Figure (cartoon, protein in one colour):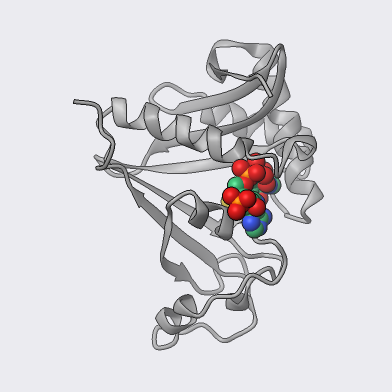
Length: 188
Ligand SMILES: CC(C)(COP(=O)(O)OP(=O)(O)OC[C@H]1O[C@@H](n2cnc3c(N)ncnc32)[C@H](O)[C@@H]1OP(=O)(O)O)[C@@H](O)C(=O)NCCC(=O)NCCS
C-alpha cells in the first residue's frame, strides 16, 4: 500500500481525522479513553502543541493512523498515543509508522522512547494477579497476552517492558511501562 507521512499539526483536516481515529479505535477495544469526539479533539490539540511530534500516515488525503511523541525527560520522550484506524490495523502499517516516528526522534537527538500501555480490559496476565512491589518483576517476566493486548506489538517493534504500575487505572488495571533505546541507527 502506498502511504506518506505528514506532520498533523500543519493541517486542520488531518487533525479532525486524527480525532475520529482516536475516538473510534479506542472505543472499539472497550477503552474508557476518548469516549466522545470532543475529548478526542482536545487530545489531538494537546498532541499538536509546539515541541511535540505528531506524525500521521496517509494514503492520499486519508489518514490511516497517527502517533504522538512528547517531551518527558531531557533525552527520553513519551510515545502518546499510537493508533491506527480499525480498517487499517494488522497490515504492518503501525510498525512502519512507529519506525518513522523513531527516525524523527533521532533527528532531534532523542535517545530513548518510553510509553505506558494500560491494561483496563483484562488483556494480560498482569490484570489477573495481585501486583505488589514484591511480585511485579516476576509477573512481568512471565506476562501472557490474554486478549490481543498491544504490549506485544511494541515488543515486536523492539520495546521492552521495564516496569508496571499496579492498579494504575483502578484495582486490577495496571499500566505497563515499555522503553526502547534509540542509540542504534543514529544519523552521523
Ligand atoms: C496497536 C496498533 C497501533 C498496532 O498497529 P498495527 O498496524 O495493527 O500493527 P502491525 O500490523 O504493524 O503489527 C506489527 C506486529 O505486531 C503484532 N500486533 C499488532 N497488534 C497486536 C496486538 N494487539 N496484539 C498482539 N500482537 C499485535 C502483529 O501481529 C505484527 O506481528 P508480526 O510482525 O509477527 O506479523 C493498532 O492495532 C491499534 O491502533 N490498535 C488500537 C489502539 C491501541 O491499542 N493502541 C495502542 C495503545 S498503547
